[in-house]
Image (cartoon, rainbow, N blue to C red; front, side, top):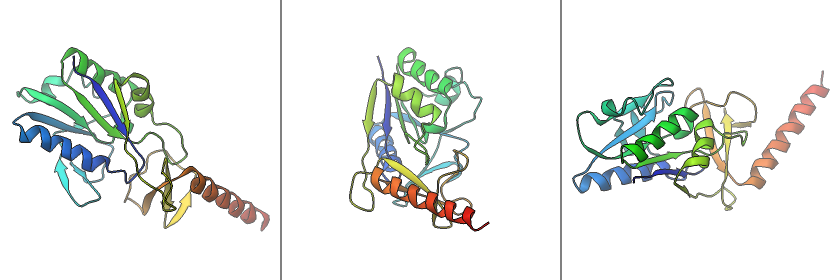
Length: 205
């Protein structure tokens, strides 16, 4: 029986690069793979993009209402595939994660998912939370904070300033949005600084 894998990490932990390496390894051995990503992730349009400058066109873009198990033949595209690899999996719904599990178990095709565990407020994404509950295998891809400690959180910056309010989804690189992987200590220090700044702004009125 094939398995459902979840490989998560903070920003800049090499998830997209690892994804493309896995796809290459399969294809180098003559095996067909399918690379998927959520349509909501507009970064790179129809490609997976690594910060190292490499990219790969995706085979299937997942819409919010897609039933991946029912669309399995469409994903296969008439070919006998050996693996499904999903980028930015945090943006999927819990139901879609269950559908990926069914593909792995009932279609006997391994499904390897890459994504974030938490958002910029340290809250869980729906897709990631479900994966943490049901994936056969969970692996952390590690990276470091600018201070040198292990990074576990994702700080959001707009116009170069850290922000701690806003919608959960804001794509990196759009409308001056940036993300920085951070250790817990640095994250909470930035959060306290922002809280003091907001309190100071309120006192001026």
